[in-house]
Amino acid sequence: MIAEKKRVPEFLRAGVRRLRCLMRRTTPVAPRAASPTQDQIDAVWDRLPPRFLLFDINQLCNLRCTHCEVWKNRPEEVPGEMSDQRLGEIFREFAALSPFGAAVTCGGEPMIDAERWFRLCRVSREHGLPMYSVTNGTFIQTPEMAERVILEGADEICVSLDHFRPEIHDRMRGVPGAFDKACRAVRLLLEARARHPECRKPIMVMGLIGKSASRELEAFHAFVLNDLGADKLKLNMIQPSFSTSLTNDVFFEEEGAVDPRQLRKALDRCDRRFALGMNPAWKDQVVMYFRSVSRCRSRIRGWRSGARTRECICNSVDRNIVLDINGTARFCFARSFLSHPLRKPGDMKIFWDQRPEWREKMLACNLCCAISHSMRSESGTFGGIRKAEAFIEKSLKRQTAGGCC
Image 1 (cartoon, rainbow, N blue to C red):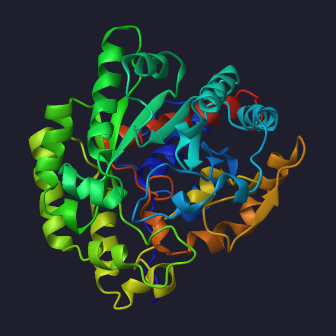
Image 2 (image 1 turned 180 degrees about the horizontal axis):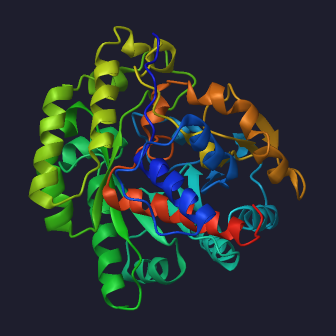
């Protein structure tokens, strides 16, 4: 399938306008100014540091999700994790490369070794990097642990909730009672935060949107925002299951059967009812993604199905350094592009400087993983766009003032 020409993210257009202002030291140009050329867009990206360091904290999990096989790993079978000391060195190097960036935990369940998670959160902050984490919530079951997470844990916390109906969430997570534990974690975290008014740490829920959830998206929002009281319901679209051994990806086959038109209507209703400030360009990407997936007749083969998005919507190469459990850096989760082991100080800068050689090829990639939060070019909300714009502006100002990236 030939991918259609990619769109320029709105926050990048804003970044180009801001770059022009900084270069001329004038008031920002009006939004109706002429669209930036491709050369100007490339020039901005070439000057920007990475925004996120996504690192595998482990490859273990205590649940048995139907869309992931990390839980099948045994500690003795998983390659050795990077030491805390080495990760601290990497945090320091990333902070020097991108002072306004952030660290994001990936891999398995981050709190399966809670003490290590707390240590890494502290070390990340010591180097000026906020830490973002998604957890299944099963290790936050007491007021004391919730209190500690609020005071010492990640700077932004998402609790995964695949559906607002207990039986569906538990079926997808493979463990009875997983729904109750996830909801208890959210409530305990909110209560702990209320006891510390000075703490404004976001407490959010990460929903999984496929056939099951898309049919009741409005009720899903009502449950998370009104019943639980979380700050936000983030929407993560299903992808082929994370597995290297599955012959048939039944989960992706069944949950990928989403009606794009009905989903768009559901998104619009939620946007209006809950004043979510959704980015219309992101809605377009979501509809395009599910239209592409629904047309794939071999969806049951998962990653081997050949499913591709009709438009190229990934710009991970322009904002991410993805670090696996062994300390090997990539620009995205796919292993078909450049990889570079980070063995000593300076390796990260060497890796990032190779980006222009791979940029064009990677921007033409249209694998399904492009729809994920950390990969797609469009932010889901206007609030996300403003955060991206702020990162661009601060990074460019630092360079203009003589700082280095």
